[in-house]
Amino acid sequence: MIARIFPRRTKLTPIDNDVFIGYPDLLTPYYDQVDISVTFSYDRQKAEQMAVMWERYADKVCIGGVAYGDRGDTFIAGQYLKFGAVITSRGCPNSCWFCDVPDREGDIRELPIVEGWNLLDSNILACSDEHISSVFGMLEYSKHKYHQSIELTGGLEAKRLQDWHVNWLKILHPKQLFFAYDTEDDYDPLFFAGKMLDKAEIPFNSRRCYVLCGFNGDTKGKAENRMLRTIEVGFIPMAMVYRNNFGLYDYTWSKFQKYWTRPAIMRAEGLLRRTKCLR
Image 1 (cartoon, helix red, strand yellow):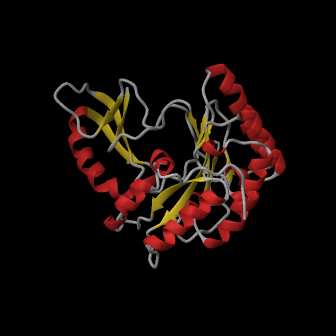
Image 2: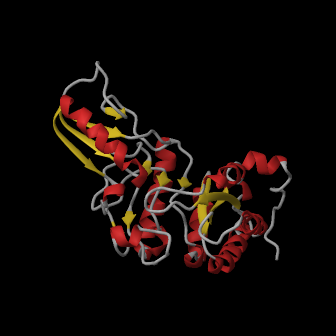
């Protein structure tokens, strides 16, 4: 038997009898193999300490995952992500200064499509039209088969959005879909994406946008302006504070991030009243 171990639990961590968080305890069974999956680089030290402890409970202990450069050649539903979360492509053709996906995973690579309802691809719209159509078709099928709301939490690149993509989104009626506003040249594509979604009557409350902040040279004033501009063009912002390769970030941004990741707070402040994209 193989156990899957994670340094921390997230919303996407699988849940079954062979999944453990952190260190073993006295009631932990013995396994043929233990796989320690590490997503965040700042969990590597803890994972390596965990490996020493888990050696007492398994014949073999392996450490891997994104934090150790795993490029994701395969994807097995429910193995290292909760069932329903799916990845159908790896890599990205862009070379954003803050992102290590191209260095780790290379250019866009299409994987076999498996059933699910929460799409986590780094850049699904960079895939071929045939692959995108097949993925959206799978999501529609899964929506009805599993009676689940569709989510596209991996992120959609605004400058690649086309009308036929939006037509699919109207069919899928996602609970939430994410775009990104990481650099200033993302703003105009985001504006036009908002117009396209407005035309298709994609609800404002389902439209989210990752907004990078807290990097060198950024200020809370500048970042707040980007959050407000994000709302103005038709998306609810989600502040993403920049971390370096060691997972370090400026802790003075914590309160700012807490505010700008909670739609309920923004709504209470009267910031989310817009319904159409204006300029």
